[in-house]
Image 1 (cartoon, rainbow, N blue to C red):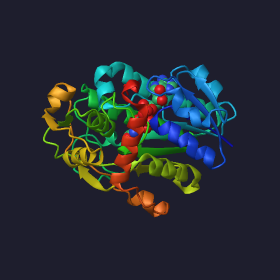
Image 2 (tube, rainbow, N blue to C red):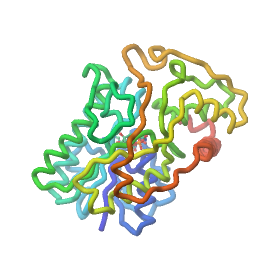
Image 3 (cartoon, protein in one colour):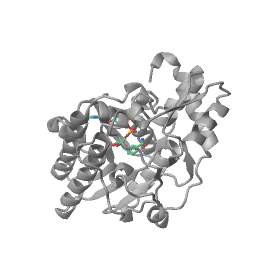
Length: 323
Ligand SMILES: NC(=O)c1ccc[n+]([C@@H]2O[C@H](COP(=O)([O-])OP(=O)(O)OC[C@H]3O[C@@H](n4cnc5c(N)ncnc54)[C@H](O)[C@@H]3O)[C@@H](O)[C@H]2O)c1
């Protein structure tokens, strides 16, 4: 029983790899290290097969998948800032990557799990969002829409192949946070943690009243692995995240408090932070009923300890990593 994790050197991937190994599985990783780092896999070096290569190269993906009974496709361009910086490259990476994952899974007869995103829900829903909520996307030309669209196309590719007999699982991840997440691509908690530890202002977009729900990565990958192991989950689509809400402004205050920082909070407009035309959403919270009907509920890590873990990780990484 061997699982190929594409994007396994990334934030979520490296935690998931460790979780699968802890459960006695064999794991291979394919990653081009575009945003991931080989160092993220230091703790499991020698216990995995690692290939540095791209999912966009189907022959490389096929070779990495050889002998694997399952592919977990996480490799993608992630993060609003990254998508805004490189809209075409991101779209290509996400759509062609998913198409290749489907094709290779069909060829090798592996089951295929796909990391989708809450971004597929688009702009219109205050939530909580159920898996059957209608997707309301903004104009397709906008980078943020393109990210949601790229993930939605990935889901549609899996659904189409599912009708051809491929065993598929779609996991729509909401905000997941924790050690090893990088701030460079605009992820809010590592960004706040980095600023607080340097005594720099925490940049809050808009008035900070937008509400989000953050899941700790340890909880998220354990649930992800539970879904992979649950036969009744296959063929389905599941929201995965946390439904405990906080405003971004309260998150900024919490980070400052936990870091014992003298940092101020600086409000900047969305347009200034992300560029004109990049929308932000007032609320993004999952409805987790489907997940909870299938799996026993996990007690989520308190937000304070999640923030503490991120701060500890940033202290360890130091300013030199520049993540
Ligand atoms: N972290 C979250 O809160 C969140 C939320 C929603 C969805 N997701 C999804 O989860 C997955 C993992 O996200 P993450 O937060 O760990 O981001 P990440 O950037 O840390 O991980 C992505 C990994 O994929 C690799 N990669 C990118 N393009 C590749 C390619 N062409 N070939 C091989 N490897 C490639 C990167 O090097 C990186 O290691 C993504 O599919 C993302 O869309 C994450």
